[in-house]
Image (tube, rainbow, N blue to C red; front, side, top):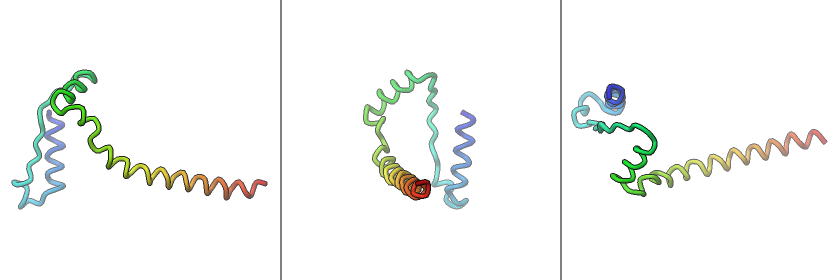
Length: 86
């Protein structure tokens, strides 16, 4: 738990000014995960099956354009550099 408290303190100092630090409290739950199965079951039991897809829409909205730009650049460079080899 010491690591979580350490991280909480740094997040609090980074996100809040000294004046608002009292209002800006991060809560760290003391949940002990021992292995993958117990973690999976705990999340499923307490948050339901929808918890496993939280944030997927946001992640897709970031990854899809990024992947398209990567592949588009790759294909453009491949065509440009491949044209000189003929």
